[in-house]
Length: 101
Ligand code: SF4
Image (cartoon, rainbow, N blue to C red; front, side, top):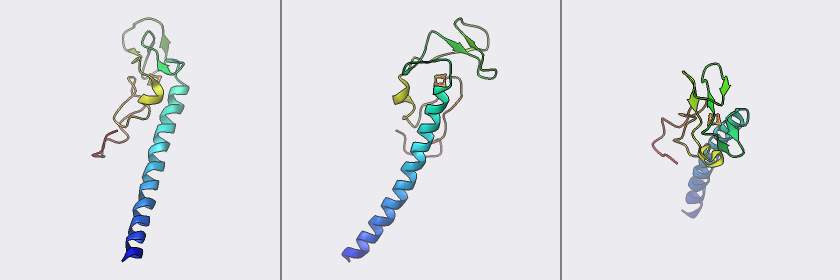
């Protein structure tokens, strides 16, 4: 019975590692998007700058149609499953999961 439990545990771990790998791919993708965004300042999404979600035009001033940076610490925000970019560049990847992180 011990070996059956080991096999079941092995299948569970295999499945879990696939899931975690996918999770990390999403987090990496989010990081890459932020790294190419003009609102990124150090490890933060700069709340004193603005970006247009469609044209990706950047501004130091509030303008119609532009979105303000959220001010969040990006390394943490990118790894929170339920979080999203204020300009809609990423987010919602885990919306069909019941587990939020
Ligand atoms: S969260 Fe969105 S707006 Fe902020 S730095 Fe990342 S991509 Fe840019």
